[in-house]
Length: 296
Image 1 (cartoon, one colour):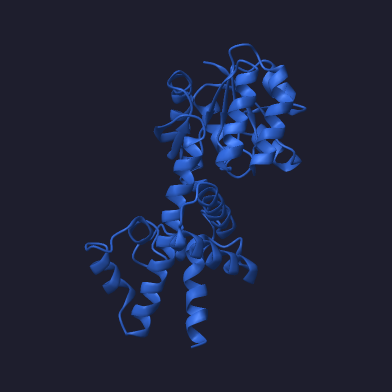
Image 2 (image 1 turned 120 degrees about the vertical axis):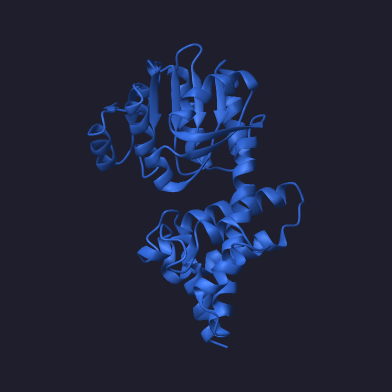
């Protein structure tokens, strides 16, 4: 088993690193937050005093960080300390430009790299059922895939450097927009006297079927595991959905693609977050739709 360094032990990183330990890997981790370090230590992760110490003896270094600037900064700091032949895997969700810049930093040091953002949320991280969307060379992917498979159930090679991030933001643009229209449909159904279950039974077996409806239904009842049944406690917070929609909008602007629906979805989630709901699950957008509908 390789020695693994893991930098970023937050809500996603901590359970991901813990699953590597459960699989028998030796994991040295670091996080800026003391509470995160303490919690991860209880999962069998050896805590390093700083990011460089994570990289010095690691065969594989995994990062799970908030934004592109953090990934570039941490990689710049630790690459000089990395072992020859190490593999860097970034599982953060960041902009495509930063992901490709991180790959370039690694290449300058002769280090293989992958961008491997995830889908599946905190629940998927804990259950090791994440989907990884991976960008990088075929050789790096072959090395990284066994590591990622210990943290998830599906690992997809999306192409060259940055393509994992491209796949992630395209997917989440679909997800964010579809959750809004599913929510609008349920609110419309309510106004028209249609029960939640009746609409679900029809749409889930008809042409309106989509993941936002059948796996993450925004009303209580039809899908027991959805956050709607637990007061919209976040599996994937609205703030994170907004982040991904903004990344999609920025990427679209950079390559001159008009994404009218995706851009409008970002605007709606931005208003939702500004109204104080950034920590609510993104499916809670249905309540925002209801409130807007009361004003008419």
